[in-house]
Image (cartoon, rainbow, N blue to C red; front, side, top):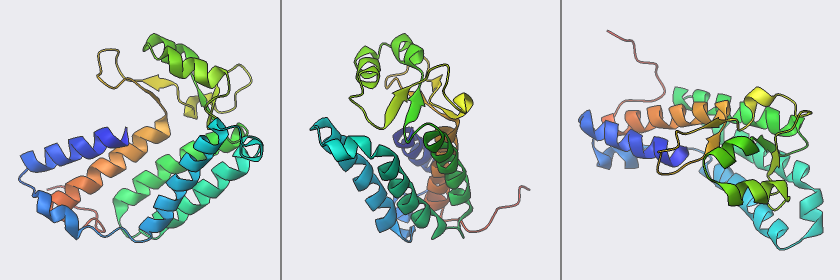
Length: 190
């Protein structure tokens, strides 16, 4: 959803008279913590796909490390209110992941409904270590990946409430950048 929120943020920003050149004025402090978070996550998925045992069994710790790095990067930008919204989304995902053994529960029914059979099978068979099938014993089901884009959407996916918060925060931040408004102040509606 982040790709869509960035893309729509750019499009709406342009329609509202924003400038693409303003994006370079955006400073994300601690970007390297955010980047390191994604490197840890994707490296774990890659190494697990190669059968590295300690990665497979240590996914809970790896997810925790990834989220700690991400939270550090987000808190370094706490003066920009779109990052508050992003952080709420990240926190909601973090809570459901940690409550379920370090893996994000995913609705297999929703994946199959969207025609994402390969993804569903990969999660069922433990090929994607960051996710687990949503089952009766899943904790905090309402925070899991249980929502889906309409079937006609060109990039079908299943997502969580936390993903929505993150997407909204990114969209708002893109608007502020493109329109040249400071994101560290909440604008009063006139």
